[in-house]
Amino acid sequence: MTSVLVCDDSPLAREALRRAVATVPGVERVTTAANGEEVLRRWGADRSDLVLMDVRMPGLGGVETVRRLLSADPGARIIMLTVAEDLDGVALAVAAGARGYLHKDASRAELRATVTQALADPTWRLAPRRVRSSDMGAAPTLTAREIQVLEGMSHGRSNAEIGRELFLSEDTVKTHARRLFKKLGASDRAHAVALGFRWGLVR
Amino acid sequence: MTSVLVCDDSPLAREALRRAVATVPGVERVTTAANGEEVLRRWGADRSDLVLMDVRMPGLGGVETVRRLLSADPGARIIMLTVAEDLDGVALAVAAGARGYLHKDASRAELRATVTQALADPTWRLAPRRVRSSDMGAAPTLTAREIQVLEGMSHGRSNAEIGRELFLSEDTVKTHARRLFKKLGASDRAHAVALGFRWGLVR
DNA sequence: GCCGCCGTAACTCTTTCGGGTGACCGTCGT
DNA sequence: ACGACGGTCACCCGAAAGAGTTACGGCGGC
Image 1 (cartoon, rainbow over the protein chains, first blue to last red):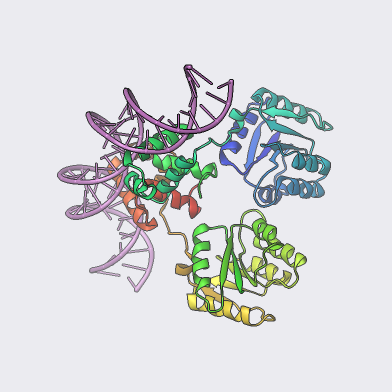
Image 2 (image 1 turned 120 degrees about the horizontal axis):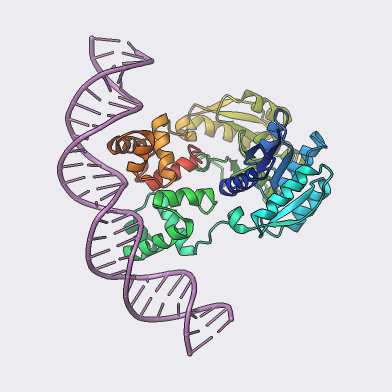
């Protein structure tokens, strides 16, 4: 039973990675965790053959989680996921014992190749690959105005109310709303607010 | 300059606590943090006279944060906030050096009394108090159906679509929606979704 | 036994939303 | 100089949403 654990704090990236990893031949189970603590908590009862872990996470960062995981289980195989150019974090994690890392910016095929390789060869180490943003799911870029409108929505304001707050016409607010829906792939304001929370764009 | 730091991962509880603490005589500044890491990061540059810290938080839990904070600054005064019957967590935190704890379920007056006491007497230790849910801001209780409807909204579904998924008429979905809006104090579905995320009812 | 809450459903009425389209202006990058 | 993008505004139109109200059966508490 070959299982892989994906740990990333962004639910969308987590799901995207889970789906991508699930297509790797030989992988029979993919579990996910939202943070390092969850990984450590579950490791005793449920060990995976490979862990993909985001470097940047709230709480215990990826680096600290790697340290603790390896001190508990020196045989754990971990590949770091680095969303940004976090060379420090990657270097620290690899120094701590992570087997390698994946950098977002290339194909799902390379992700699969790395996972396949890591699973096939228990001694495998350090083969940097890139994972395409479209697979990782980078947060859509909203303009300042669009975020203001999204925040208004998250506070239960109507378009007209948002307009009054920002000194805009209701029609302008609707334009911003339409554009941010498109960027987020939202079907309506409730969906947009949910995606805003999931991407960490609002709180 | 007497300052108090409130650390809780729930934005609503955090705000409620901030407001309550701000009314304590002698308190001139109340800052907030959303997690343990934030507290530790800011402690070097900006120390508070008293810290109110939630026991249960994602990432570094309250207990671990207490340990680290006290190893960095043995003089720090910390009161734990326990939302649930988390006796283990409280015991660990007190063993690690927290001065006492507040348990949700009693009055704002007792919260104020505890804070006043802790600020007045640097040697003060362990006087359990209860903080009323209405002050802490307990998450509204939604029924299973209401949560299902709320989740549907957070995925961008219309009432009719939610109805088809749950084998309900659109009118019934609207009834559930209306009731959950009332419970959450939401003005529309976008607001309800936002409150659902803030209360941790959906993700 | 009654009251309150939940789940289900229907009806009406008004407001709001969301899509489509077009338009003008400023800025930035090429 | 041109185009892409963002910010502003307007108009139309159909589809939702939300508020109010009523209703009925079940279930748990007092």
